[in-house]
Length: 313
Image 1 (spheres, rainbow, N blue to C red):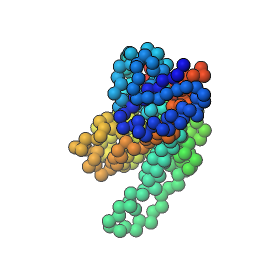
Image 2: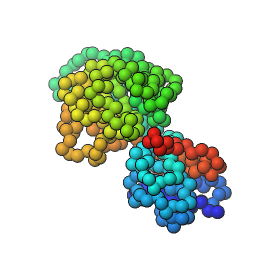
Image 3: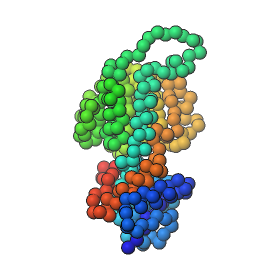
Image 4: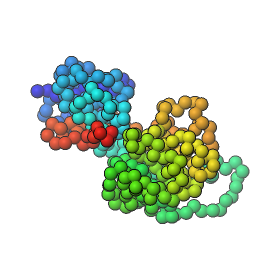
């Protein structure tokens, strides 16, 4: 029987995904007949390749559905959909997604570590012969040790930074001092010079960075958030920036996107706004990850990245 795979992501995505997805499916499924389409009778669909900007919101008619494979790492916009009862898998093992995040995080950590802004914009032509500390003298805290957080932490550790990591459940990553649970958050942040937020958006992670947790950081610490906007208490962040408790915040994600033009983040001299570009799903690598996961399911193996509905990720 032919496998029918419905591509139900944004309308503009199909042009980018059609060829790499068909090629990847042919590679991973071998001689198995499979077709990937943008329209099909619901009762004929075996798998759905999905993104939260999709037109599809009611999964009830898809009675043959084996799994939904999300194109994004975040699933907060679909995990609570009560019509979706089939397994849901978030994007993992996408080397393009991971590499993009590692490059963005490493670049911004190094920017703040080296004090690049003072040299890039120096209208007074000051000759401040003050070298930055070495990476071995800086502590970076990574909140979130999933695939992206672990990869970023490892890259920073390889550069010599003292890296601490925190997650909801205990993880072990070479080169990173790992803690977990509510009791592990304070010692992870205690005295950290830079904090990178890479947690999912769940009820247990919202506003994880607030007035209380900001106070644990080193004076003048830097916040870098490429994870989810809801991880940060915006008012507490702005207050800490105004008081000098924090020296800078580089933010790639926000509660409302695009970030409204009137939002105070845009004009704040200690805030850098980037337009949700820290890591984008790229069609070539994402297609391979999707096809490999479908092949796993067809072979009777567990889906990679299967979402725990109770945990929300």
